[in-house]
Image (tube, rainbow, N blue to C red):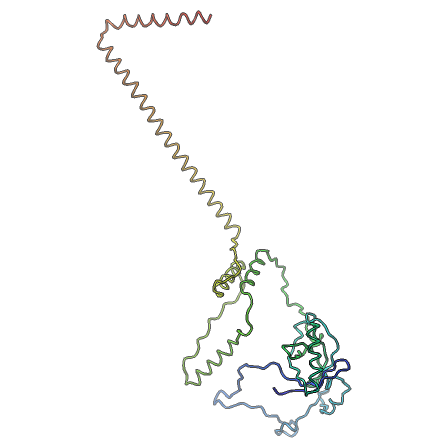
Length: 359
């Protein structure tokens, strides 16, 4: 990899010659500006305003525009002569925990390579010291015409440096957070936690730039002579979430399906209170109806039993009376009176002793 800056790391009285190499690269698809009428390239030409002619890169220098519009020329020699120890040196100023660095300050990343054989020993010393301390080094360095802040840490067996923004370059998040009072229920937090557990972790190497892949596929289709272009994905409708609980539950189910139904967090759907109350009322009504039906069946059985018993007694009495009537009719009227008198006398004889005993 080509170095973009040569200098040294100042580690106390130890100086480590290094080369600065870009640690990242941009894989975005680049486009050119064209004339839509004929497809011709649109190019920018650097023209001197005073002479109105195009100039080469070797003729172009730096200048600072003053408040009155005048230009003050600045040369590379002027910048090199600045009384800055960081002009060619990465000066370590402190060692701090990595957690003390706000990720908002992170800028471009670089690899620091030992420049020559003599630099191998002090380079390794600093690398191993960073590993054992589990800290990062804060440093100042100058690059591309300005002094910057950097953070040194170990990546594999290489010292990497992240350019950091100065603290006063970080904007305060004023008027960014919602200005309305919102209450989040524990049930909603539980579902959010379940969704986080279901999504789990991800292998960073498995992530890819889908937009770049789609652009490359579209370009390939055009190169092949106007073949079928990839179909656009349906746009997701935005707007407010009407039912947050339902959205969270659906998200958990979708995440579980995407994971293949593996070992994921179990989620118990939470139903609104109104629905639960309605269900309870329906169950009570159903129970009351069943109870009423059972009572009706019991009453029906009792009525049938009573009717049967009454019928039996009535039949028996009727038969006895009919038989007696038949017997009376067969004896005739003459025999009826002596029999009646005899029965009355017997009844009086039985009643008399009871009255005396009672007296």
